Length: 119
Image (cartoon, rainbow, N blue to C red):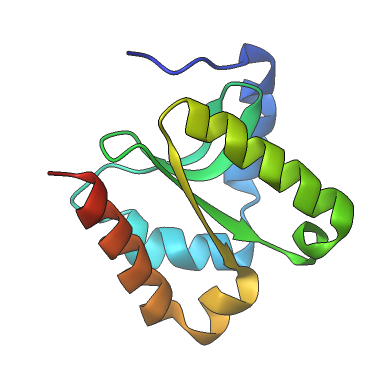
């Protein structure tokens, strides 16, 4: 079943793919891009653009900068996660600092999430 998506977001998603943060580039080029499971960058799902998405595992990976730790950002993220979960999608979040300071741990956590979601 195809996921719903807001086609009005496609141009913005394309721009975000071209302008990834250094942490997003690190995770993409050094782990997700060559992963045996297919991942998408800046994927539109419903009215959202998620950082990374694996369709087979129904897994979203979000990398959060400082704005995500302010109350409005936290509320938005909670609502977004709730909506995605109603679609059967699991969301995992990492801070940009996690990617910088504990890249191997981030990759291991992602792999464990994938392993738990694919029989």
